[in-house]
Amino acid sequence: MPKKPPPTYESEALGVLAYEFPFHDKAEAEAKIKARLQRKKLGPYDAERIGLLRQMKDELQDEIGKGPQSTYFTQRHDKYVDMRDFDVPRLTRETIARYPQIPETEIHSFVPFCILLYYLK
Image (tube, rainbow, N blue to C red):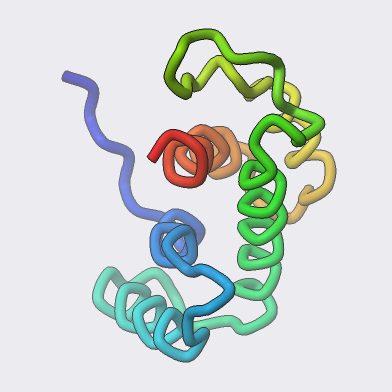
């Protein structure tokens, strides 16, 4: 079994932000992020950094939420939704290009998670 990578500032913040939807209270997510960062000693809460992560998450949430109307939607591969319905490599590459301030490794793991969360569930 592969060893789980150590938590990072971005992974902890994105782990909370992923479950934030437009109708949610942003203050609640921010409190959870602050608590996680403090508990795991990952540094102080940085509103600008969190804002950038939130912006990326919002864009991914919106795009994936379009389903078959998304420019990254390839085609239905089965009678049920499937991860292959989206061009994950292209979406990942283009997200990395739009957000060079966010570590690539974080985006590589976050994009498939977003597809799982916003499309497959």
